[in-house]
Image (cartoon, rainbow, N blue to C red):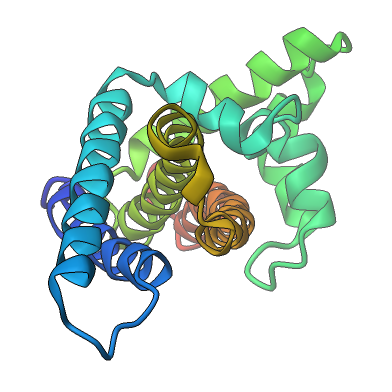
Length: 220
């Protein structure tokens, strides 16, 4: 399999370019008139946007996986932390039969701690054991890649919004683009929803692949 985070040099670059075009659109009053003032405004917007993207790139390298996950889920449990007690029973996945899950993972359910903190760690640990077996499975690999991509897109929009507000207030607070802020907020909401969906899908794919292998009698 290729580097699972190769999207950093592909999809995220395209996203940055599209954001630059949208940024420019909101910062130039009249795109039909190309004169010195328009070019100056475009240059200023490009420099400002470039600075923000550089900060986003640096912070992305600094953010831990735990910090990124918390930005997505806040105080809520991650899907892997409640996969056996909540995600599987409540998720309508036609590949996964709840009765078969209870039978195949009987030992997991029997040893489930009662304390919430211990329970979260236990469920995530048991799920991670399954994930390690199928890490290179194509369904698991690509669903994980999609989850990580959506997560990084959300974190990128979150950081861009914060940096834009701080830099714009510091440099030129009279010309804050509320249209661009609205665009970032909308994309922030959409990318958060997408990241949550992809995260649950990734977690369930591991379970579905494991159950399928158990059914055909492959060693687990």
